[in-house]
Image 1 (cartoon, rainbow, N blue to C red):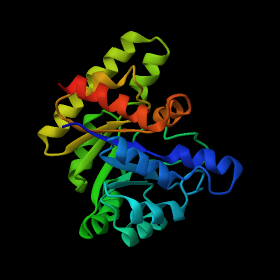
Image 2 (cartoon, rainbow, N blue to C red; image 1 turned 90 degrees about the horizontal axis):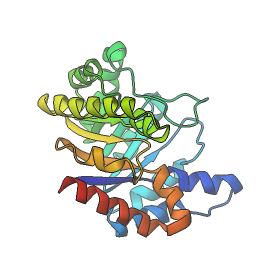
Image 3 (cartoon, rainbow, N blue to C red; image 1 turned 45 degrees about the vertical axis):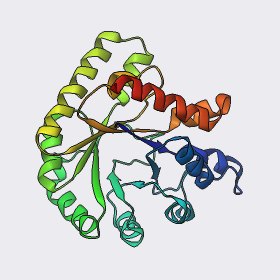
Image 4 (tube, one colour; image 1 turned 60 degrees about the vertical axis):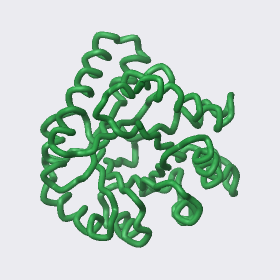
Length: 244
């Protein structure tokens, strides 16, 4: 079955807009569990713009599904991950000035550094994922450094769809399909995510080699109108329909 990971970062964004403790991202994670999420994703950024350290503490205590801890390849984040030992860590690029993660990690130019960075995480039992573009060079590099999982960045595909650039959308979708199969052939588990909506999810969910989709911002936005539980259940339905 295709798994759904729900990213609860932007529940924390709303909370932080006013300060205080409401809405609670840990509560949102529990709602997501009950609605059918197979895992929870949370990105602890260097500037703590949404998820805070105490949120990671709370998620580790409260969840009965796996936590996917998104993080930059910094000493600080490595130390936090080694302390908590989440089920999975996903290494992502991070820039202070970006609104959201703008692209995949450049692995091929940083192979030696990243190989040494992820080795201790694997040793304590974390499943290491690398967030990358649909590019064979980056996939091969992720495989060489010892990552067990890659997550393909679907942002360009979703942006092309939203902008009505359908030829470019279709070309990017074909790249994603081809690279998911290529990564699988190397023995990597393949995930995908970023920007997926009800309109765009099914084309990616239909890829037979993709095992998990990670979706956050759209679901939190849709929850404003429909509620978080119904929003997740509808995404789950569309994924299952596409995979069937």
